[in-house]
Length: 254
Image (cartoon, rainbow, N blue to C red; front, side):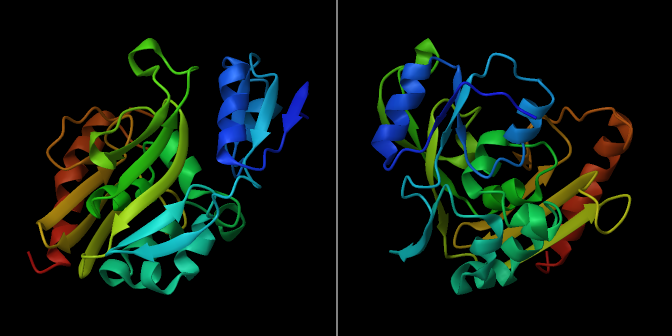
C-alpha cells in the first residue's frame, strides 16, 4: 500500500491551494484517486510525500448558469450524467462518452477535474468536452512552472489548454449543442477505445474531436501523433482517425 507522510483535507479552495503551493511538488491534489492511488501504490511517484484531499473544498456541484453548465471539479462522472441537462445535452453525447471511460465503479469515483488534469489520450469524455466547446477554470499557484507562476484564476477553452499547472476548479459546458454523434473502434464494446471521434452541432457549426491519436485528445484538424502499442499500430490509428470522424459526422447528417 502507499506510504504517505502527510494527509490534508482542506475546507476551502484557498486552503487547498495554499497547501499545494507550500508542498513544492511533494504534495498532490487527490480527487477521485482512480489514477493517483495506483501511482502511489506502485511507487511510480516516489517524490510524492502527501496528498491534499479535495472532497471538502466545495467543488462538488453542477449548476446551469446563463446558457452553460458549470461543473465543479469534484463532481464525479456518474453524478454528471445524472443531471438532467447534462444527460440531454447534444442528444446524450456526454452519457455516451462517460460510459467509455470505464466500469460503473470507476465512474462513481472518477471526477471531472481529474479527467481534465490527466487528459488521458484515449478519454472519450475529454474528447466530448472538446467537441462541446468546454472551458476550464484553473487556479494557478506559485508551485507552477516559471511561465505560469502568477497566482490567480484563469478560464481557458479546453481546446487551447496544454498540461494543467495548478488546481482545476470548474468546467463550463455550453448548452447550445442540439445534437451529437460518436464513433469508436475498440477491441470489445466495454474496452476503452483504440480510436474514437465525438461530434457536436451547436450555434458555431459542427465540432469534432478525436482520442487515441495523440498524447491527449485533440480537436479535428490538429497534428496527430498516435502511440504504437499492444492495442494498435501507429499506422492503424492514423488510418482509422478519418473513418471514425466521418462516422461521427454521419450521425449528425453531415
